Length: 167
Image (cartoon, rainbow, N blue to C red; front, side, top):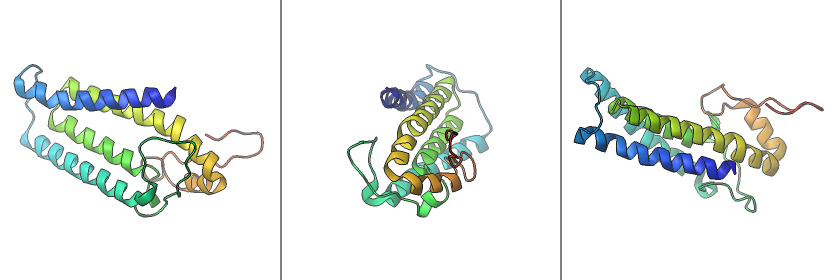
């Protein structure tokens, strides 16, 4: 259920993200006139985020998959960008979308960013992290306790103690 909801929100976010610039270019949605520095910053952040997605995906090597297949076991990647944050692909995707929202600052772009943010949170917290804890057990628990979820140092999982659930 969580995976299906996350996928739906992800696809909605991508569709809305594509629609935002189109609607702004056609004049169907008004975008405020911001100083050119915002436009350049938005373009730069979008490009950096996009290349960050590609780099993080390449860093996963043979372990890269779309979604979670509970019957498949891949190696846990903890090197490269994954040594800094546990979900660099999602961090880079959110960076790309934030850059796009700055580049085309409309309510539509903000909605796309929000859809993606909620989709990523659901996917990571309710689908991927439980799968990785079941599959890689203590190795993942130790990694997650030391490495931030999306930002270095933030969202680390607490080590479980007897009788206390993980956070």
